[in-house]
Structures are given as structure tokens and as C-alpha cells.
Length: 201
Image 1 (cartoon, rainbow, N blue to C red):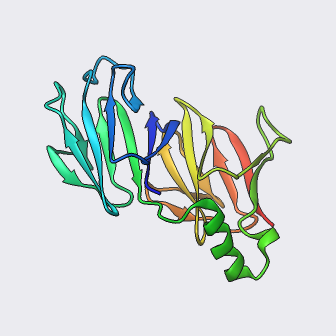
Image 2: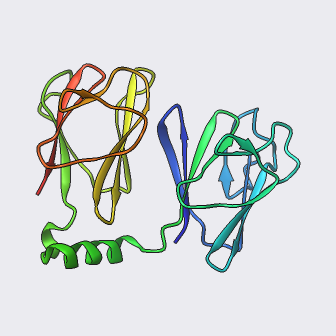
């Protein structure tokens, strides 16, 4: 089922499944996706399901709606597209496979459902040393907002890490760029003054 992942400054604040034919987005509380920010119009945009396609339509909003940095009036969304409304980024995920199916697909690949896509982040140094964060959600953010934040995304083939902003993050001692990078068991992540380890069982 397709969904929208809403974030600001690289921090995910909500995920909304697109279950209705029309999903409204705006500042007013009656919208399906409410973004309470003055840069967002009361009724800003609408997301329309047409079969397996999702169309985004701007409702003549004051500040406009952008898809991948370009102004959009009505546009077919593709998996991974970034919709920008004010300072908010909304990632479109055309996730036709639900999590149970995803686990089953992963289990087929490994032959062991119990171990399919189980992973966590172990904090080795810094203020939260000794803490372990299980990666059970589709997107898990790590780091400190305003300093350095990374998102670890769980997919059919494993986990990838992508920098959301700030700092000089590194993976196994090498600087991380803007592109998503696949994670392997034992990888060391340096972020916001802490060292962490990706552990996959």
C-alpha cells in the first residue's frame, strides 16, 4: 500500500498510508495529512489514487507544491519522489508489499523466516553508549536533530543508510555522501560525535 513519510530537517514526524481514493493535505485539522505550519495552506494539496497510480494535485496553494524541487500542479508520483510543502519534505513510497509479505519474501531469500531482516544499531560511544536500537520500522532515524541525522530504511533486500543533513558522518571511516548506502553486518557508523555498529542477525 502506498504511503507518505513526512519529515522536517531530516526527522520523520509521521507516516500516512494512502487508503482512500482522495487524501487531503493542509494546515486545517480536518485534512487527512495535517501540517500545522503557516507556510502550508488550509487546503494545500490532494493525493488521488487511480488504480495503482497516485496523483498529486496542488489546490492553488499560496506557496505552491514541489516534487523533487520542481513546482507541480498535477503530477503522477513515482516511488521515492520527494514532495516539498514549505519546509516539510514528504517522501512517496509506492509500497505494494505489506510488511508481512516483505518478511515472507526475505524469508524465502534466506530460507529462515525467524532471521529475516532482523537488525539493530548498537551505540558504542557517546552519551547513549551501550544502548541498542532495534530496526523494526520501515524508516528509523538516528543522530541528533540540528547536528547530524541519518535515516536507516528497511527494504526487501536489506537495510540502507542515507544522510538527512548535518555533520561529517562516516561509514567504516569513509565519509558518507548524499546517496543511500547498503549496510552490512558489523558496519561502523560515526554520527553526531557517537560511534555505532550495525548488527544484523
